[in-house]
Length: 386
Ligand SMILES: Cc1cc2nc3c(=O)[nH]c(=O)nc-3n(C[C@H](O)[C@H](O)[C@H](O)COP(=O)(O)OP(=O)(O)OC[C@H]3O[C@@H](n4cnc5c(N)ncnc54)[C@H](O)[C@@H]3O)c2cc1C
Image 1 (cartoon, rainbow, N blue to C red):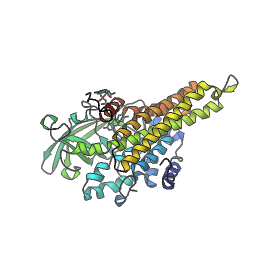
Image 2: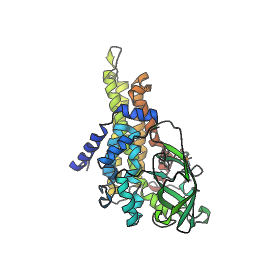
Image 3: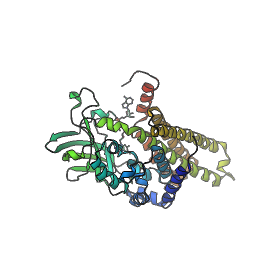
Image 4: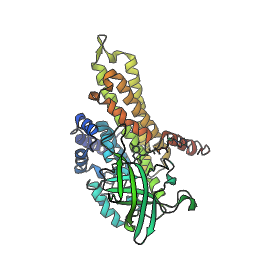
């Protein structure tokens, strides 16, 4: 099925109606002042969009990743990653709690996330492990009633504003585990600033949504904050990876489409040599090619989402959609800057901001090399290369 249902169209329209209250000046000022878009976050919460994928019993809408993708695509097409990243984690992050949490944990945590009362950040990446997630060192030592956790996380986004952290730890060293993925435990706990220091990382784009180096010093986490079984956290994390890839893909595609719209508008209006620059095929063709690439990536992302929602394997499609969506979005933003000439580099036209933000989608949450290795191994049956 290639057409959206009336309900899905209503989702896009509803989200767009909220987004339209926040214009370019709002997003540019958040970026300039490095200020979290609180007003937007609140508006999305008030209109019920933060709980799209959360169960209805816990204040959500109980919808699938396809609907979440429609939400995030629309959001990114209006406010780029500044908007998308401010709510992104709500769409897939609580998934381990939904699937593996106890009834008490779900009742306690999920409605607050849906209402936007709690904000959660995701502590996976570490300085010495990088993409080799099973080599994380943050350690949760068992003590009476809970765990004492110490370690470092890197790039943890929204840790400046979050009051909760979804935290990946080791409860057994890798060397003592029969499988590298064993001995990893996931917690959902309070971001206690007495025990957790959060240092903002100055970065190239999306300054409004902070990313941080996080230092955890002997944090006590009660047993009640552990998700599922001790040692099984990596498996719980993996469940949520495909949805995250699909969402990043559609966010990049949304940014690319926004950039393309701006480029086409400019190309129609900008007169040089007594004619609109858009009359030149060397201006038209690269933009048309961007459109084609964005469309192709969009179809693959929707296909991956449909497979996921049907409970079918979607790893190859989700990874490929992330690869192609991020590249297509990035290329469209770059072409939009080039189409604007010198003005593409001026903040006034916003395309340079889109370009800075969309680049993140090529790097995180997984690199292009890792995606290509996944496809090579899992689809083409080639030997593991690392
Ligand atoms: C803006 C931003 C926000 C982020 N937010 C979060 C967050 O909220 N929470 C979180 O946990 N993380 C977050 N991250 C981290 C992000 O997920 C990682 O940066 C990403 O997974 C890459 O890991 P790394 O930076 O450690 O790269 P590294 O693992 O150091 O890799 C560096 C490069 O080497 C390549 N490489 C490594 N090994 C191989 C190999 N065997 N074969 C081929 N190539 C290889 C990689 O593909 C990559 O290009 C964020 C990152 C950014 C930039």
